[in-house]
Length: 322
Image (cartoon, rainbow, N blue to C red; front, top):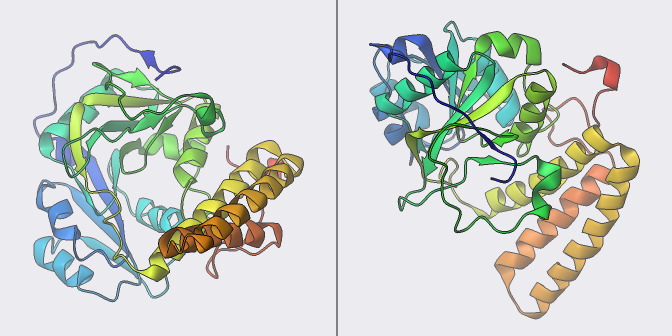
């Protein structure tokens, strides 16, 4: 990455039982197809905390069958990823929390290497492994800050770094969080129901003086898009929230003027794309672009991201953490 800084790697002895230092926090929502593989490689000494967002499939039966020791929080109504993760993090009793999507797979070797890096770099609040998709290809787990991404070319053929790097952003698919840093940074912003909550979190931790480090020697698997049962409703929800949350971050970080300029440009963009896809009878892309258009309009109209969220706008500066 253009802005990532290579780090010299000092030597440190790995922990003999790395899972004993870790609480694994997983947020599920209709995740029966993937949760068994996620839990299968978690060590027996790990504290497992699962927050379920109103699954109506066999997710919880599978969890209790594989990991009967797991602490389970059952939400009758889905509260989104950030709020769900906050519920899980409030139960953590270990030094580190591993935030893992239900469609990810993290083994003992990866945890050991993440902890080794965490011990070497005590200013690191967040550490990410190298992430491989279902086909074994690299899925970029680090990036520049959200507002700078359009200034860089496609990362399709990017070569993974050969050692730890500091990054502006780490993907939330699988990350190791230092709990002492969380006390300073504060929880995920619960006004965001889905998407960009990891961008917001990374910007806040770096503003507080902490670092985010990619540890490419630690390797995990991520199915990508497998955390939730696919449906037309899910596809609409996904793109509606992507549009809403993007405007929320613009508003929070750059102010109402920047938010409005971005919103009106996106309204025109998505409306034209939707019209073009209607004329091409491309129902899938039409559905996607209409969802984006409605999410953008929803934010401008002051509609909260969900019935479970309390705010439709960012907190005033003097009320934010940090």
